[in-house]
Amino acid sequence: MNQSQHKNASKFSLFNLGFRPFFLGAGLFALISIASWMQVYFSLGFVSIENISISQWHAHEMLYGYGMAVIAGFLLTAVKNWTGIPTLHGRPLMLLFTLWCMARMLFLFGTTFITWAAGADLLFGLMLIIAIANPIIKAKQWMQLAVVSKVTLLWLGNLVFYLGCFGVLTSGMNYAINGAILLFISLILMIGRRVIPFFIERGVDYKVQLKQYKWLDISILVVFIALFLNVIFVQIPYLTSIFSWALFALNGYRLFNWHTVGIWRAPLLWSLYGSACLINFGFLFYGIQAQYPSISILTLHIFTIGGIGLMTLSMMSRVALGHTGRDVRNPSRWVGIAFSGIVASVVLRALVPILTAQFYTSWVLAAAILWILSFTIFIAVYAPILIKPRADGAFG
Image 1 (cartoon, rainbow, N blue to C red):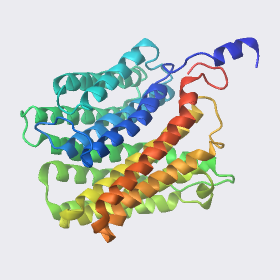
Image 2 (image 1 turned 135 degrees about the vertical axis):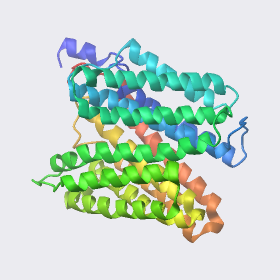
Image 3 (image 1 turned 60 degrees about the vertical axis):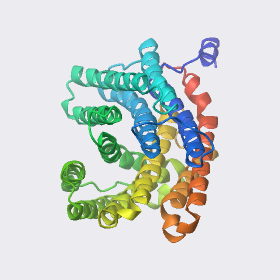
Image 4 (image 1 turned 180 degrees about the vertical axis):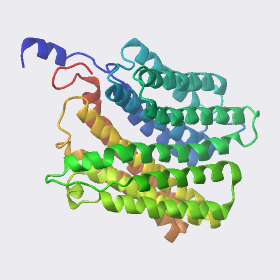
């Protein structure tokens, strides 16, 4: 390393590109939010909450707090790659991140500062939409606006949540949370279709070409839209079951075509594939839940911990290595342990209670501890990577 490279290596680079602050913030908030939730859940602490339930408070922060941070970091980085046009960095990125932080810190106090939290949160979402839409429009990549539309729907969902909090929209919180879960799953299906087979083909230590079918992609999209519209607006249980089980079959066939034995030797591959499989099992249970609502809380956590949680942790781990000039084929050995912790967490939170409901609260606590340990590992491994410059000395 020459003198200029050595000097660059010591620089603070947290606001060079979107994934850096938002992945670090998401990882830290994953710890803080679940720790706070456990205090409230087990009555070890008190949070002033009015007009919403404590479970809605928790769900909002994991979806519109943690989840949106990961989306912001990923898309601010991906859009730059897709379009070749720089996205927010430096002070504008710092401002966007500060708005997200303000909303999260204020909401940790429950609804005490709900007006200020809502203002910061909605302004953050609006700025994010503009930040990712501008380069796409400038590059005239109109197909990429499908991603922007989903982020916009998530922003509208957040608005609906706050309108519910203020008593303007009846049941706004439920619409916002149910809609957000499906929108996150939709984004994962869309982006996963692009990147998971690409990563697998280039990540295994042998040549493989995975099968892709246009009819399958279109079928999954159409059925998912039908499911979303029914769940949010029509709410006919047997249609929910039909659409969910159709997605389980269609997406299961896609995952069958994506499978190759080499993924199980690479944590950054099996975690992505495993998360996609858990989402698929989520569709199976979602169809059952429509007929037996008593298991809804378990289905919810298959989607959120196993699907969203594992997928985002895996994606953050890979993107952080790739976009800092490091070898994605050689991650820290601790990363696989973190992924395994999330898998164990979803098993204890969503599956084991079906068999041993009498120990339900113990399984909830064990699952939370495993989640916290997994994200502690992520922060310990990736905080230095996210703060320091790229390994090759380039900007980003």
